Length: 393
Image (cartoon, rainbow, N blue to C red; front, side):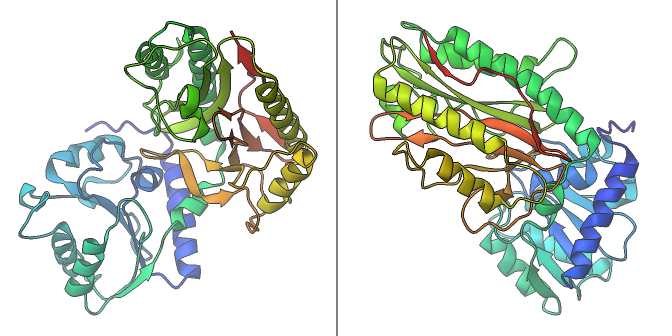
């Protein structure tokens, strides 16, 4: 089958090498990767098959990782991954959501066949895709293995983006700019929320004339009115926009699963004084904080600078103000690594990508204005140039 690789085989090999280096430092001989974004990162596999058990095994002494998944998805691995055919394994359908057996029993048999059943075996224990039954089954099936926690091992490698990854993220940013402009244009008094959301989703997939988009990991977040007082509600399918509505927009473009998220706020009417002041204060704080982001500063120092910038305003933001993001699948475009908040000692490096997201959610409304940024050799740069303001219509 003809491979359809998004990156060069050389880049995939470098990612696997870095993973093995991290494993070796942690005393890990073998790693089970079940997060679909991490599977994609290491192998290129890109299928909407993560509702069944699938994964990648990385062993220190094996030249290639090996992929396992449902048999009917095996050709997907042959088409989208850089792995040779003899490193792709499909399990029979009798294991799919079975009441009588479990896919980890099949995997244990495969590991025994490969004489890998006695390794120091790390698992993504705190991920969406690994659960208690998987752990208990492996514990039962592999009594001579040492089961270890490998949560976020690959995620941390992903925080430093290659030039090829940044290219895709810049393409995602072009899509996002178009998506956000679509939302701002479509939202108006009397318009059904569902119709605006449908056009936003269409713009995300349509992408640009030169290239298309991927479906983002998070559905368009675009609550209105009092629903803006919380962070993660979507549109109301049975409601029309009304005069004096606040509408929050947290939207993303995506290209080959690489994201560029952006937040803005729309007000339908003449903005009240308190909302306009909140907007002005947040935007000023955002702009001041972006000037200090550079290699060598820590994540918590970024958040501290934000707090100083808004100290005189009366605004309080108890949640983090940003996070690392990039390649991902539902339910999240974040990488679960860097958080811009007190206590995070991560030192920023060139090639890291952050969503600087100082959203404010008050008793009856919210305000959002965020920026996706790239840490450069000398500072940081925005992926998107979109007006930083409260959009009043």
